[in-house]
Length: 301
Image (cartoon, rainbow, N blue to C red; front, side, top):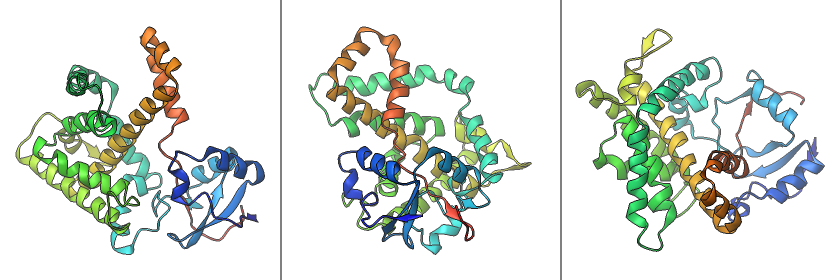
């Protein structure tokens, strides 16, 4: 394995203008694996750069575990144990079992029944900004749609919207001083989102209502129904996975359309191109830049 003398890729400043594609391409051309220093996790990481090697790491859970989390940072011990019970920290078969709940909760037939409600939300969001001539797109549009859809599906009350958004921002953007004073604030926010999910589950048991939360609580996982704490962890995964990534994808889409007005004109002229445009922005501006796996033993790769 070759050592990289300059830890460039893991410097967050290199992502201020988007994914540093040229740097990644340069690393990939010259290395299959390379070490880069990182102050947040045991001194550094091995970067795995070729698809066949990436596939091997992701598919060999016995050697490369997800149990220490998907983030570059090492999670403090006081938070790690709780997080390890959640889906995004689990390896198969536990991870697969939780995924069945996600598949059940967001099955196409159930979402299709709620499509008119979601379309109405989208129209209302656009109607609020369309006559202003300009808007702060991320906050006023890109955030609003996944937030309102997710919260409606999960049965979150409107009075709690602002608090959950603040916690999600702190968790996902803890490296940004605009959202957190220190990185540890993000781990604290994750715990608070779990607690909120627990309270949401408890409220649904007392006040049953038509929501994905109610359906999940009534379902079984390995022959058992979820406890409030189980649902709290599940809630954390759904909120971060469903809201943060969607907000970023919508924001990236409008950014690219502004940069490429000819593509925007094509979409306006032919709405049948929209489904492919969605797939293309997911490919071109993937919101997940990396995933971490932790070696379970010393080994040669």
